[in-house]
Length: 628
Image 1 (cartoon, rainbow, N blue to C red):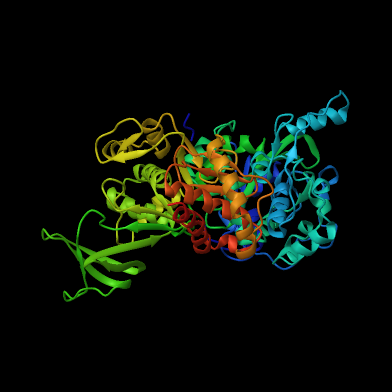
Image 2 (tube, helix red, strand yellow):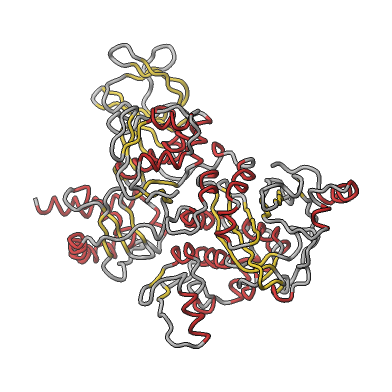
């Protein structure tokens, strides 16, 4: 079921003044040995000056909004022994919780850095097979306890799901045969690691008991390459919206939407084995690193302090300014109505890329002003004008909000953004690496003009989130099963109802989920499609190997899964293809297209959608021509 600061004066200068005035919110409380219930540290956007907040159990701030200016080498340890075992850490006594002091155990965060290395180095990462170790020995019991986070005996888990479930056995450097020198060379070449996070370059530090400064964790996360960060962030987002997570961080998800991409960790306070200590670290949606922790497990911290986290972080986040989600959405504007496009002065617009101001004129005297910045193009077919738009996913969502709704109804607009994204992925047709959809009242109406800040904020707030488990739709005023009425959603928003509850009422049988959830989509085997593909693949094999550079047949016939709705896709690490059918030419083209993706998985051509689509059509349409 559905479940849902800018840097100011340097700390170095302010600390003596705060201590001298006896400020009860910092020096006095910490002198009394009162450790904060929650600490949050994130990249403020100013190099060397992370934002740092701490709170008591009631959510009351324990320190004023200050940052500390980092000087090269200040409170930093360098060299191979820059990390400290938790059991021997001597800086763990109660006192000022300095984010530059070594006092934070890595817990499960080490798995995130191994995951990154595997991606960047393209190192083999075979599935981990759970064995359910037999026997009553301590080693067997410990092994079984670890496998709880992985899979059931006899089952296997792959890389992305292992990160999602925090399966440490999968990421064991020994199992993966990671060489310390290769690890060191990779991380020492990353910016900031040698000076600010030297422990990251030591493979021996990749264990939960390693203790490091929280500020150096930010530096380590900042060193993760952009492509791997995006991949990891997509997987981590799934954790916040995992319907099996307990306890569910409802307040955190409700307050921040999809703007937090974090890996939880749990260990104990350094020097205090009986005190559970946990939190999470990762990235905000704009790519800035974040770390937070307190007493309890990571999940407990998010559930207990979700509202405090959301309130503190919402001040630094601007969803409308978040980097838009990648993707390609093609929109056929005014699909059901003839029109002519004019430039200023009434002259017919020239074919090609549109830049500037235009007017679309319709036969009954209606006109629509349009401002284009290169995202629209005009073609004329048989004397009829046609405008096609090409947008990123979140830009598309914002344009639909702008056209269909009132973005100032914040909670309703956030709910609608999830519905729009879900509908698009369910109903749009795939064209190469793009999704194609009409601008129409039968689908979704799309603004041809750039969306405003409120619409962009609503789309950015829910970026990457969809409804899964049921078809979805919406209407201006008439609700029905699996269809949200905008008028009802807007009324609920005005009454103070949050976006997730609005969705729950409209779609009680759906789950709120991350688009890129590696463990969220089961495979319903499509035997007919597998048989069809196996026969065709044998026929295509010689031609593809001789003429399509980089093609390597998959090691075995791919598993084909039947999609109830949504765009076809392939999973290269699982050798699986998901399609919606096999009856039509488009169905067979989609299956062939995804098969070619699998065959080009080790070659740069695997990212060339035009080449892959050309070959898919060549294989299928050539075959049809030969048999007609």
